[in-house]
Image 1 (cartoon, rainbow, N blue to C red):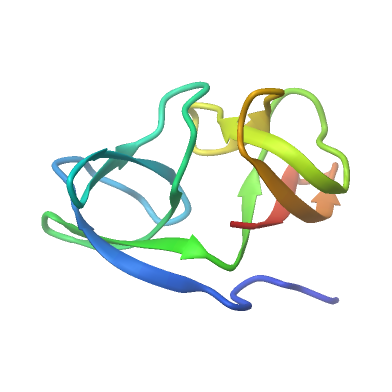
Image 2 (image 1 turned 90 degrees about the vertical axis):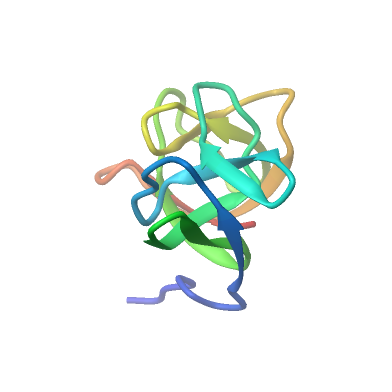
Length: 112
């Protein structure tokens, strides 16, 4: 199986007052501080690891996330958080490059 997961990933450490499980889309809420996304939020990256109030966030590279709603297409597609730990198609969100889609597992692999 060909996978892009982990390629070119870059992380940064942010503060958080929330619990961020790995793979959860997150948003910037204040200077160097992140929180989990709500439905329709733009996301800056994906939580990688949390220790106390510090969270490592993948902000660049390929990641695989669950999607809800309409199945995205390949290429550049607007994606927003779905509020449930995944993403959904959004006409107004930042366009991300989607390189793999699994209808069976309802996941997409995208470039942040």
